[in-house]
Image 1 (cartoon, rainbow, N blue to C red):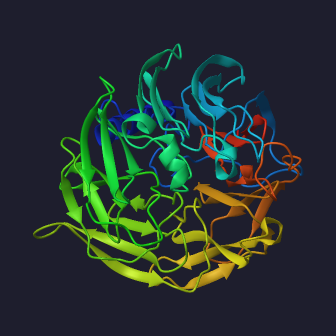
Image 2 (cartoon, helix red, strand yellow):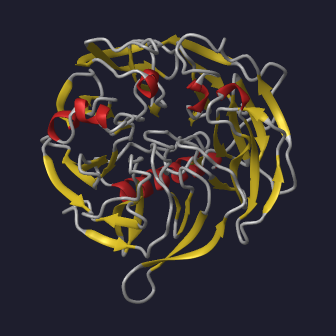
Length: 468
């Protein structure tokens, strides 16, 4: 009876996610034997940094959970995506900090989730990377659907590959079609760091235009051709607009692409690129590749690139045009961050706070977890301080927290900081990094089907965190 019940739940969940995302959207299946889920896209199955997975280890032995495998990889700051037995990663050859080679290249590889064995690898040529922030390599997390893989590299090559073989089906070159590499450099652009997000037969990427305008581009997944462009036509504030990955929000039973754009939030119909919602003006300085808005049903959590305010909002659809209502703003944190999502889990919001910040000294930066009351926005507790970088996801009442060279298991509770295990010295802090402590620790852990994936400078590490 228990087995039949589990299978029924899995079937219902699979139907739910299929109905939610549509046919071409990242595969999202729950397992019948427990509550395991794929992580087929940026920020996981629900695009909000929280996995619905349960049945995980709630304490780790000394030295951390069992390592199932390690696979050698190349340079990159993107997360792996996982669907079934496929683990997909985008990477590039190592680039020296003060070097810019004439020619470059990126690779997409697929590994077995069970063994770590490489199933296929596909390479394509690019122009040589710029130095500086380009040094870290590709940042966009792949998206996996039933039959395809979608990636975007630093130079703007949006690629659809056959999931089984890795063969390139089509490639849309944003660097050629939208904004050239030379102009990117002049604009101090940090490269195409967004992750591809799909709704139905459209994959969408927000882009920065030469004249300072912002646009959202919709690409037809069947043809690889530009289907539509949404352009705001208002220049952003002087801080610039270096766009982050899109979110998905449902408005009047229609899934829409959703993001912060030119001092307000906008929702776009994937069918035609038309605006469905544009919020009132909310000021956030937006520059380097921010985390997308975190959507939890009708609630939205948005953390700007550079401190305050943090917005916690609610989507109202009861009467007239849909609108966003601000529930609270939080102005007492020091963020200065481009990539870390704040996440809602287990009755609270968990994020991070800079404690010692020096823009010219990576080695002197420290941070801590902050626990925020979801109803009021008040701070409930702070963790001890650690060296930056920082990244974090959540599942099963747990936080998986990554700081410099260290992975921690933390209880997601409002009662106070409680560490349940840790792994230290994940890497040597040398090689594929950026000036100071290795920014590889910015890369989020990825949870899928009882396994935790950690991208290291030259390895992909797979840990068994299932409570068997």
